[in-house]
Length: 545
Ligand SMILES: *[C@@H]1O[C@H](CO)[C@@H](O)[C@H](O)[C@H]1NC(C)=O
Ligand SMILES: *[C@@H]1O[C@H](CO)[C@@H](O)[C@H](O)[C@H]1NC(C)=O
Ligand SMILES: *[C@@H]1O[C@H](CO)[C@@H](O)[C@H](O)[C@H]1NC(C)=O
Ligand SMILES: *[C@@H]1O[C@H](CO)[C@@H](O)[C@H](O)[C@H]1NC(C)=O
Image (tube, rainbow, N blue to C red; front, side):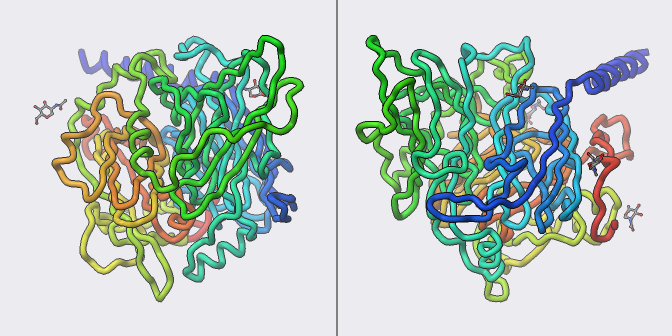
């Protein structure tokens, strides 16, 4: 009897799920991707534009909406787009990385279609193939909460999207050739604000109004320190998580990270206003490199006065770690759902597995490569998601990838980690190198429970934040340091884990997690496969052509 009851309940909830999909509003886009010559930082460069725009158009939707993006590839190169930070529930088919999709070939189009489930926040999209991100092709994503879900701050009067990132004069094809030859990328030539050079981008402020600035670091390798002259920055959101509100005078934004801040415009009793600087300066580099945008008030003279806030010392890691630890989840509010975030006590869930991911460098035939646990990722001719779907058994070798560092000679390989659906996993990113790291996991947010200097060991767990750690999708790992995360594996699919730094990613510092249910062997164990079916318009290539 009870069995039947449960089945009926399951059936009803399935019907409700289906209905919520069937009636979800659709945000529809037609994007034409092409090259365009643009004059940037005093030089001409071939830039990737979307509908002739650089950065591309804003992608905005409300949580639970369906997003449909029909992309026409007018580049002479294959193309794929990823939605950095969107969880694409049960739908890694739409992820737009090389392990999940065959490329959209030149002169053809392909339609992405996915639902944004239970997620709000600020993100960005970017091209994933062939180092095309170095030529642009990126844009901002905003996901609004549903009407009835409370937001833990008054509605801002206006919102601005701010995409900051390092920029290189070199054409992306030249930069790519240099990586292919086993060389590092050069130092960047400048920092852009929304695709423009110093003092070319401005944001109009009206006295007394409050603005939400959605800021993402869309660059290839440079951590940027963001600050505004004479205005407080109230941090409110980090990659979809509302955080405990705190005022910062400067904010480190690592490659691939996104933040929302609230800024209140000044009011002057006699109505005389000046303009103000916004800075994004390189952090943890040898030399100064900065981008500048402006805030302008009605009638304010073009040029700001004064210097603006000072940047933290270039190599001051201590203050950066301190800031990272101060960014915490607001336990009193829900994000996309009306249940409070704090009702989910991640710190009380038993960890089912620990994985240690240790990055390093190697030489392969004399060329620079980057590794995780001694394996530098190489792509098979067929995307892993298709390999898995069509059961091409010779490509993914279960257990090939060591989930702990080993002393074996580094190799090239196609690293896929099999993960049980509903596991609760502890991952430690261990960075033994001098360079700063930034890691991203597609399809997931995770709790950042600890940062530490040196080698990680079991005893470090005692210092973890098991109460209000921030939940996000991109996290930094400091030089000679580790970062620990906890992640609930509740999203089936083939998901990319990567260095967000373009050079490291391009040269092999990545892997895929294959998150699967138990299969059909024992239907009583609920977690059977519940991914979306293969899309009707799937592109075929490689062995499944
Ligand atoms: C997206 O932005 C456009 C233009 O600003 C606006 O008209 C539209 O209502 C927004 N859509 C959603 C779902 O917020
Ligand atoms: C390509 O665009 C056409 C016209 O908009 C559309 O009908 C078709 O479904 C698109 N093709 C794919 C594979 O998405
Ligand atoms: C977690 O593990 C402990 C010790 O093994 C066990 O007593 C407890 O029941 C587990 N909790 C859950 C929620 O599984
Ligand atoms: C791969 O292995 C599965 C399970 O062992 C089998 O059912 C399937 O036919 C194999 N596929 C190929 C292409 O050999």
